[in-house]
Image: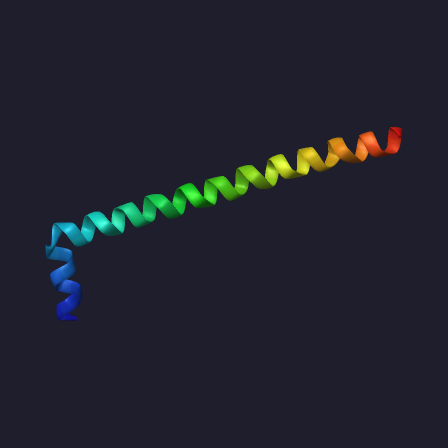
Length: 52
């Protein structure tokens, strides 16, 4: 419990946690974007394959 209290009082610890959260949010947004793009590309290749 004392360790948690020290981290809360320590601004460096709070900054590290904030950067970690920002990195996690960017990763989630990237995964969602790549998933959407991948679905669109798959549809394009499927259409091209069917026309061939």
